[in-house]
Length: 119
Length: 108
Image (cartoon, rainbow over all chains, first blue to last red; front, side):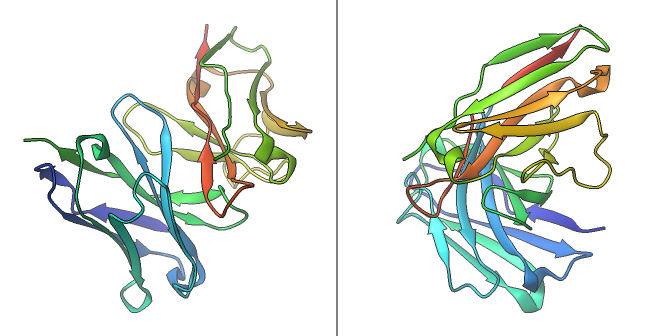
């Protein structure tokens, strides 16, 4: 059974940077489109970014465009999210998730990694 | 950008049937997917497409859609069905993904 494990969360100062990683196992990672989804404390789900299997199609939510960069390394079964110019409103649990059907259908989720932006 | 609208909270008596709805213009072009989330846990996909359940999801969960509204129905709700339910779909205006605000389900 497929599994995703996120890492890299922690406390970051406003304006700082952080790189999140997501490592897949039990699936042929290179066949999947993958996404980052976040959830602020006590709030709902917010899609952040998506990347297709060959990294040829990349999309970002308006709230992070120009500050966040998604990338992947299929040889390492890994997904990344480089977050720059972090703001307090970026504080959230960040999940990676595979997309195995149409847009918005995420069948495998990681356990999430918490990013707190605070001075 | 598009939006998906859900009722904030719904309750159902144990063993009864409950419907959770999701409304938005994007649903005229995309199917909704539905996620269950329990406190401190990652979301779990429970329905996708026209009415498809991933492996391991009980058949008491079913879905339907009409025009700009998608529905998740739980027939014979169980105590373990309590949690937050989110709908998600593609955004008809771009290649983004949108989620509804979530519905908190209480099983009484």
